[in-house]
Image (cartoon, rainbow, N blue to C red; front, side, top):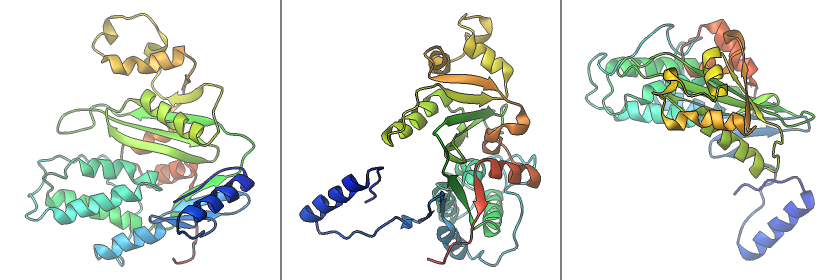
Length: 300
């Protein structure tokens, strides 16, 4: 069980009361929990899953494989009809499931892992090949994690992006979002046609649970001027009649000063990493912007 709080006295009292009722041990400051490694110091916190990543590589016998610098080949489109179906798909499902758990501290893996998860029901040798390429990328980035630096205040910012009919099989859009606090990203996802306004509420609830409610609107950055204009324009016109009611929730959120939409250029759109394959330089740039870097942590 994890216990967190800003009042040291209350934390100590709570732990004493729990120990009076239950047989339990105080393991001190958290440094390892459910495969997640946490390093804490006076100026920052670093989280990663280095040991778990190494274990995945060993499980699939890729611990000595040649590393690759990018997750996917650029402009590569993957379809459910690609390649020959695997006679035994359990290995593929296990690999993708392991990658999904690794995304708990690795936002850079979110897009390719979400993409691969679409083929869980009937994977092919092509899908397995792409999944192993992702593991080759992991091989060279096992020490990657997220640094949260101590800052003067708490400010929640969001970034949302979407491709256009990116799914080859059903022509649906892939949407992605990230939310940052200070130096690091705290919330991220990549999926087909996500509702970002609802994700904003989830991120704000996390803040509230930690006693850090935000009085000002959450700033949400988007690189689509048309989408911002539609959200800010209360007039229902022909171009928006087809939009599902739930997608208008972003308009209500801005009207009620819960979010404030801003335009940002594609160059600084952090959610770009959630919707497409990126070249090495772009991938490394966005990793840094998300607060990701490498750290040499002691072997667990």
